[in-house]
Image 1 (cartoon, rainbow, N blue to C red):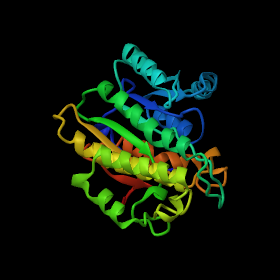
Image 2: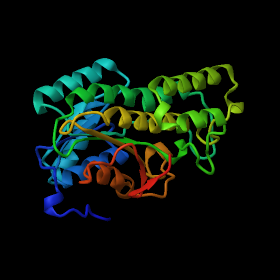
Image 3: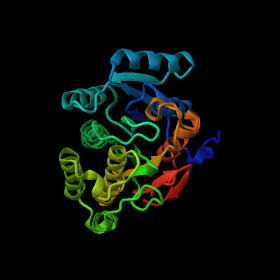
Amino acid sequence: MRTIPYSDHQRWWSKETIAVVTGGNRGIGFEICRQLADHGVTVILTSRDESVGVESAKVLQEGGLTEVACHQLDILDPSSINQFAEWMKENYGGVDILVNNAGVNFNHGSENNVENARNVIDTNYYGTKSMIEAMIPLMKPSAAGARIVNVSSRLGRLNGKRNRVENDALREQLSDEESLTEELIDGMISNFLQQVEDGSWRSQGWPHSFTDYSVSKLAINAYTRFLARKFSVRPEGEKIYINCYCPGWVKTALTGYSGSVTLEQGADTAVWIALAPDQAITGKFFAERREINF
């Protein structure tokens, strides 16, 4: 694997740097925790199931990565998020890096049913959004800027060759950086869920593959760009840089273990963005350490 190619004078982080990873108990999330801890960052591994999180953290600790702690977190449960935020504030004083990795997908192979669409959207979009909203007040002021990395997917691209949004009006709205609003993104999601309910979703120009998952990631990509613009007015020393990335089709439970990308490769770009010394990187979409188009 490629290592982070930073010389010491570019290394802005230390073990005082606090990184939170949602869904860190397995798969890509666990590997992101491992790589961040390996680079000397203090990592808070979160897991919906507390006992599973404890076991996962123990694996890393026993491997010599002592600066790893864990805490229960269910991004679908507002009280769980609030409890976690309070705990972070009391124990660590805030957060430097947030990696929003927790997510679900219920389609595998050539399946494309939307019976779990509400759960997919609630977790992948609204849950991630709730987490970001709760963590913003805790993001620590620093010269390097706080970092948010959203794990997304090429399946949610506006202009992908194979899985594009075919509704021209929607594509145009989501492409216009200046007029992109939270209301617009939420409205798109509400329309999709309404169409799932009334059965008209197939003819509305949504992505053809893994439709509910793709729409959730389309929303995350748009929300990342919206927040990057919103954060851009924050004063120097209080900057928050937010980006998203596609890990590729990784061999995990989320893909039914059908992926061709290893966990190490899938986590690599997240860690690379989170620790990048070039602090002006924000509102971008990456894959394999390269910027790609939304």
